[in-house]
Length: 245
Image (tube, rainbow, N blue to C red; front, side):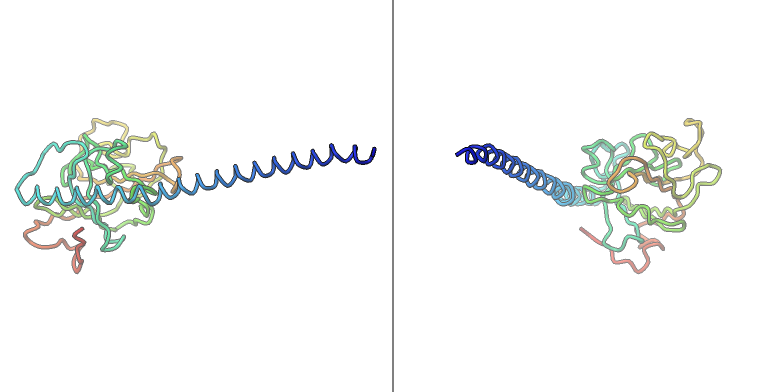
């Protein structure tokens, strides 16, 4: 009888341990499911919503162009230009929206208000997501010196070429602090923000590395060709099959 009495506490302890292990296992499974759902949301659902917004903005922008509506000061969240990057393939097409707030960048790559517009003297600066919301700048690190970047507006094709910016410290690609705003100055990487611009520059910014905001990757390009749409495609898109949607 004494032996039986001694075994009872051990059995109870074993049962308690199994309960703890079972509870821990259920917690880990639940946590795993939550993480999985979050990944699905971040990588799939956000892309779905951005694709919907992009389709709407593209349709709206083309209708406005056809009607001769060209806004010098477009409202935040509206489409202002179409972006094509030949290195990323003929399928690559994004509407650039006005603004860089969270709500704006959910719709697509966003133009920094106050920076130059396409084709203007100054710096046309654009931010974009790298891993969510259709990740327009996912492969921004693959852009090389000499690569063309083409903007389409109502009547004009503007081709920028990735390269170092003359007379500045701005390299064609650089990694900077997330707080470095000098890259989007009218004259990039100059200490004097009020310095008068003479070049027509394009600047892309995004998070670096992928899935992290520890740094910012920056790509600079210079305007090298202006082609009226009435004259056909620009040289950078020669033989290109344009994606329409």
